Amino acid sequence: MISQVNTGVILTIVLLQINISLQANVLLPFDAIDRYEVSEIRLTNIGQFAQKRKARPNIPEHYHTGIDIKRPGNNYDCEYIYPVAAGIVISKRTDEAYANLIIEHNINGFKVWSLYEHIAGIKVKTGDRVEPSKPIARFMNKDELNRYGWQFDHFHLEIMKVKPQPIQSAAKTPERFFNSYTLACYTLQDLHKYYIDPVEFLKNKGLKR
Image 1 (cartoon, rainbow, N blue to C red):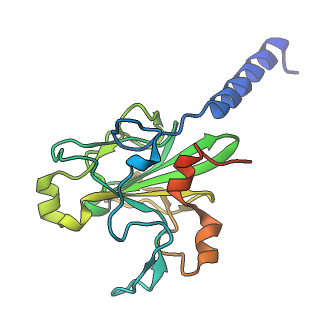
Image 2 (tube, one colour; image 1 turned 60 degrees about the vertical axis):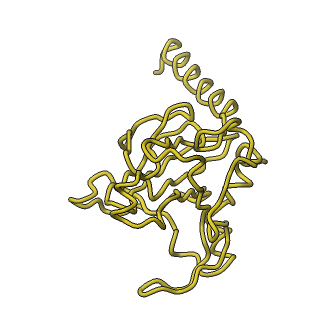
């Protein structure tokens, strides 16, 4: 039999979770004059959501599943990247140019997942709770860009409405537990099944019922 005290504790936790969800703050994932203003976002030439990407060796033609955000200024030492909202880190990939983080959020009653790729200087680990006021990583610096290529002078942001695919972690990436659908969207139907346009998501401050 559950005591009244335990019932009260459980109810309090549930109410706190609901309150956090309702009050979720959705901000731009980089430093800006106004982190609520989507006009601050600058994309690369081929960085738009749903843009068709040409086939490459071992990669078939597909639709771009996120946006590629340019560095907001000329800071090549430590230009921070932030989560778009409060959440829990569920996957961390640390292998060179394709390092990424996947974060699970509960926003406006919806569960969504954000991915940040081509990042460096990762500051968090899986299981960490993150807030949009604290950086989780940074853009690559000049040494890293010289090593991996200046085509990575941006970071890739995705917003998924379907939980990422679970994968087996490897010795090189022991905290990588999930994979996004980045190279699985060969039709617009596939794209919209899994993804939300990050610009629209940021503009709407999450999803709308």
